[in-house]
Length: 140
Image 1 (cartoon, rainbow, N blue to C red):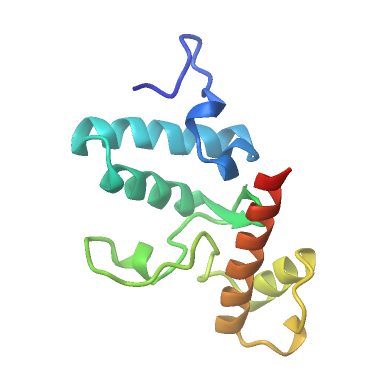
Image 2: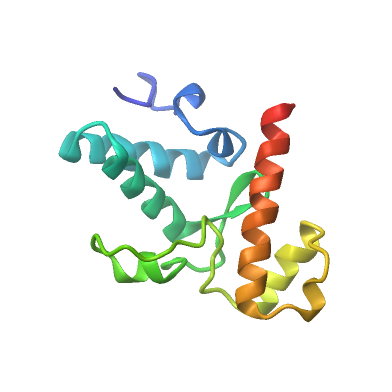
């Protein structure tokens, strides 16, 4: 099933809710990769993981949506390693970014206790904040 209209626009209803609230480029990246992955792997979890991996290369989850990263690249150890190895992901948080960047996002999302957190703690706190914001957005 194509996620694009005849004129090349993404059909928002075919995307996860966090992408429906994201910029067009993020939507295009996910939809195009998912369409191609489904052609190769079939409709399933592997295709969705491939699409999210592609999305995370250029975007990071901020609250209830995806924003373009300052520089492209893997967002966590799972993305950097590739393959089918089972390593934990950072759930859309760009764990490879600087501690300052993570702190700035934590400030934007009003994460309590952020000033005394380590980089790893900021990543975990941002994951929880993103999940919370996504839940709130779904309830609206």
